[in-house]
Amino acid sequence: MRTPRAPPPRPAPLLLLLLLGEANGLFPEEPPPLSVAPRDYLNHYPVFVGSGPGRLTPAEGTDDLNIQRVLRVNRTLFIGDRDNLYRVELEPSTTTELRYQRKLTWRSNPSDINVCRMKGKQEGECRNFVKVLLLRDESTLFVCGSNAFNPVCANYSMDTLQPLGDNISGMARCPYDPKHANVALFSEGMLFTATVTDFLAIDAVIYRSLGDRPTLRTVKHDSKWFKEPYFVHAVEWGSHIYFFFREIAMEFNYLEKPRARFLALKVVVSRVARVCKNDVGGSPRVLEKQWTSFLKARLNCSVPGDSHFYFNVLQAVTGVVSLEGRPVVLAVFSTPSNSIPGSAVCAFDMTQVAAVFEGRFREQKSPESIWTPVPEDQVPRPRPGCCAAPGMQYNASSAFPDEILNFVKTHPLMDEAVPSLGHGPWIVRTLMRHRLTRVAVDVGAGPWGNHTVVFLGSEVGTVLKFLIWPNASTAGATGPSVFLEEFETYRADRCGRSSSGEAGRRLLSLELDTASGGLLAAFPRCVVRVPVARCQQYSGCMKNCIGSQDPYCGWAPDGSCIFLSPGTRGTFEQDVSGASTSGLGDCTGEPGERPRGRHARPGTDLAHLLSYGGTDRTAPPVP
Picture 1: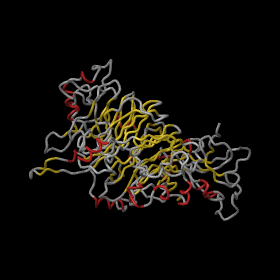
Picture 2: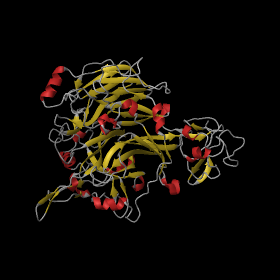
Picture 3: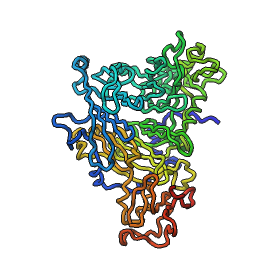
Picture 4: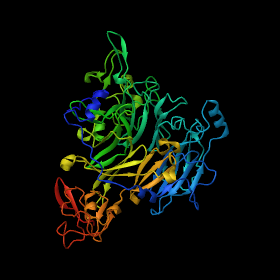
């Protein structure tokens, strides 16, 4: 059974009706969080502001940070800044200040700066902003900087930050303008990047370089391949690299008759594209030095109903995680900036993503035609976009017949959209002041590592924490998610107040640091490490601790609410399902008071209450 093609977005008046709940009451309710963390907790969280060994503040006379990228490798954090790269040790996790142990200063040379200024750029733009920061192998960092609009890349020792070899060109590997989005990853020694290749940022490209295979790129200046893309993320899965991005949808443009009026709807849609890792390009006649396997499809994140409500603007995507045995990515979407504000989280099974690329192609036969599916009998064989390999009819992509290569060149778009798991968002938040733009997921939360918690970061650093039930049918009336907590991550006292406006406190990344039980929130001028839970705020009140439904928190016999890291041993209780807190008092008695008859299991050192499918059962003890 084929997944229905996602129709074009609805006009704003209908969106408003949906948001107001007038579409047969199908729009989901949005309950408030079970807990809001007090702001004074924030003052105790460690922060990096450029401080080095032996000093609590940045060296006098240095610029404010302008962080672009962060990369965590085990217990070490690398921070790519403007003109600098920092190495920060994350241990001990109890430290009140994050300081760098090594610092690499990597400035643009005067000639590059002069050329940049001559081309009309401001002095502040003609610096070296670190835009690519990757682990190339177990001891080498691969770093690219914008270098005053003349991008350059280099290898550095992970331990000493000393250069390894000579610099290489950053063209097609790193954007010229630090404001432009880009993604990059290494696979099998090859660098896959998605960025722009020119000073004017009009040539968007997915590019493969380095390694032992030929350099490849997407077709240049072809709106069927790309139309003003904004690259968000890339993942490796199976024999392909998948790129997630948003762009202007060309499939809504056509010449309308009888008025001969060109109908061009500038609609942003979210996409996933893929390429074969072993692609070697086409023949000398068609797609030479270009991808023969590039295909793209729309991502469908919408609230179902008589009229679907679409979240079309992709903001962030996780890596591939395992949920209920499925390879899944979670993605954050929002509505357009000129629409009603709203954000949603949808999950996509990578096997379903791959299945869409085996489905029908979509085409526009003439400028006045609407886009329609390509009949199967008109699709050449072997299937366009497949990965050639030894032992197959064609052992390399360069051996494909011109008929196949021409079809791929003119038909990169799939007809069907990738459906979200459950055919709807797992989380929806509308009419918020700030969009949700970042996501981190913990698929091993709690003492047994059997719960999934999703952290969503807003533009200004407010984090929303949700408990997710991947199999929504087991959650009963609670739905697929529970809004556990809301807390702040931006430390205005250390990271700067409102002098630079909201842009100065824009959340750049949100990464889980499981070893310390924390989140690393990066902003332009600082990195803040915050805990994934604030269990101590419930100490002395069993009802609040149990009622928090937080997999990270448990009630201890001494009347405290304690943090439960994976493998925690000892006596504690929790009720992650939130089945009931009746009989637990109202928190007006003595601190730590425990009502009788609730969750009592004499003779065991683990009294842990969980719920699966609405039925309470005790989880097995930790080995």
